[in-house]
Image (tube, rainbow, N blue to C red; front, side, top):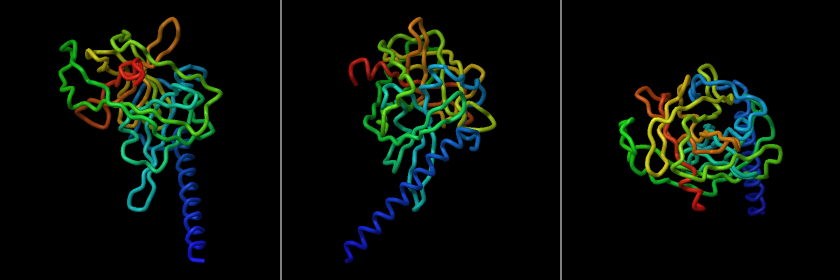
Length: 264
């Protein structure tokens, strides 16, 4: 009898945890509609456009952690790179989150469904050596990491964005998307132009925002280039360089091609 009571208790606790995680996933969606604080936003930029390939593939990621018996939600950004896989920054999902939820957008606003996700790979790209002195920074002190998430089910109505295949190829202009990009509210999907300032011999990029300021909550946001074939993922936002955190005008981009061009 005691074993049956324990089993019922565990089942009830599991149901409670699932309900709390679902509620936090919904909170991520509500935040993406303008109901959260500005702490995790890149300030400025432009509202994401409905139908834009970058906007449709960009995801908001809710990271659910447990501390002192309560569940907490933090947010990052990511990008759909396969029907069931998301690329983001590894530090977004460090430790052992009790749950991950992913949501997509129609223009600047979140839409259902909410997907559960799990971490299947983490990478630490080689920082290399800067090829110019345009930016003075100690590479060893920079956060540079990538992670791949597995979605609970494939996304059928959105097209994944292909990854760059040449680590040394850096477009003259870049673009970032994230679930912030607003000085008044966080969670709405916006985009901003980036100007590359320096690169390393392994593909790391340091870029300056154009008309915006990057903040920590947009970590993992896709940084893309565009060519005659369309948009492609150069990397993800891995760190913000700033004297006045949490926002700044300089981004460190973790290169996707360095990891995935050779199969990871």
